[in-house]
Length: 144
Image (cartoon, rainbow, N blue to C red; front, side, top):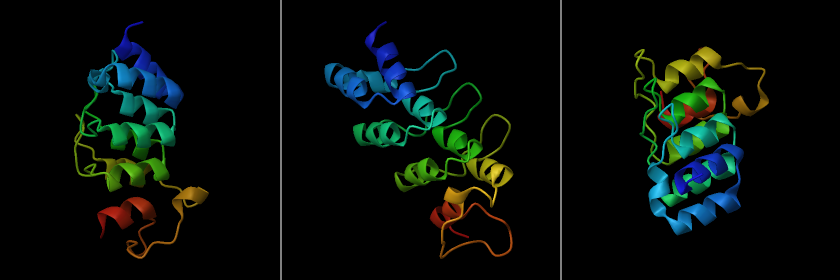
């Protein structure tokens, strides 16, 4: 495995120590992509590794890269109902209005996958959309 593949694998498995090791050897690993055109950030999000997502963003990985479906890491977080990861991406500048190849935004997926029964998605929110059953954290950060 080359350093790009090792870095992608480390991000996918949430192995922060290996990510750090590969990043310190070669900062260009941040631009590595897999066969689906997914970056380390996409893979960390897909596997729910918040600490890896935070570390990648600290390294300066771009949140705006799109995979073969035109999806950013935020699209994936919204599809997986990963409210904490979505909130982290939004706080770091991710655009919730970016469209994928089907013309769908992360907001579309957040609404599509929102469930009031998911405890982490029902936090207190000063800017909740009224009576819409909205995903609170995404709405709070994007605003009504």
